[in-house]
Image 1 (cartoon, rainbow, N blue to C red):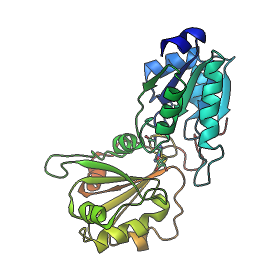
Image 2 (tube, helix red, strand yellow; image 1 turned 60 degrees about the vertical axis):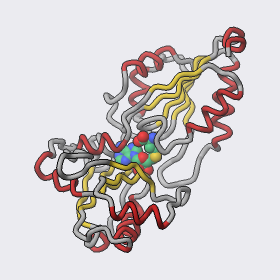
Image 3 (cartoon, rainbow, N blue to C red; image 1 turned 90 degrees about the horizontal axis):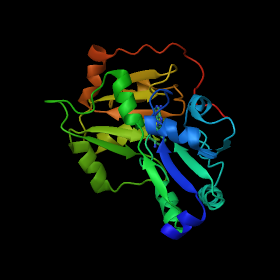
Length: 266
Ligand code: SAH
């Protein structure tokens, strides 16, 4: 990969910007942002992170999904932007919400970078599940309650087989569903159909780790009635499993503002 790196001093950093709270980023990301010429950011990134750490001369480009709507920029365009700027000798930071590699299109970006022999590095970020867990006092695994955790998604782009649903309904692992809050009652129904126990607790956490966080709790059996009429905002996460009951005991976080979002358009 030496030749191109020597020709251009271009470089791409693929970085996770954490779940929302602007302080939940790594020191390395802060340094890379300060050095960046171009920042290509998804929308599920707290804009304060860029305001606080980017150099004033950096070019900031917003890409990626907005809430539940369709892609505002095609993945191919994002890859092309990354590559064009790196070829022009720029230091590019590609910012993604949460962790870079969980329910993201990082594979396309990695393939584009390697195909074009562009030097890159990857900085991990705190994924939404970890943030929702910490900021609601729900350990995702807990001795005697849950021996494992699975990160999943119940979304048109990600279908699971009936075998998979059977195994999800029979495990005592905690299940964390990304991109699924709007279909939470369908999800509960499916797990019940494959016989997960009806009084299994289920929670939805909106905007985890931010001042706007909201928490909703029910059970697989009751959530259709109890969540009826609630329109969960984006981003929201679904947590299913007995660990959810620990929230009552260990919740410490007091969100301060009920309306609004930190995921602002820059
Ligand atoms: N790479 C991201 C996930 C991208 S998929 C990560 O590691 O967190 C987008 C989904 O992540 C959203 O639909 C939502 O389910 C979840 N999500 C991201 N940030 C969140 C937050 N602050 N609170 C709750 N869910 C969040």
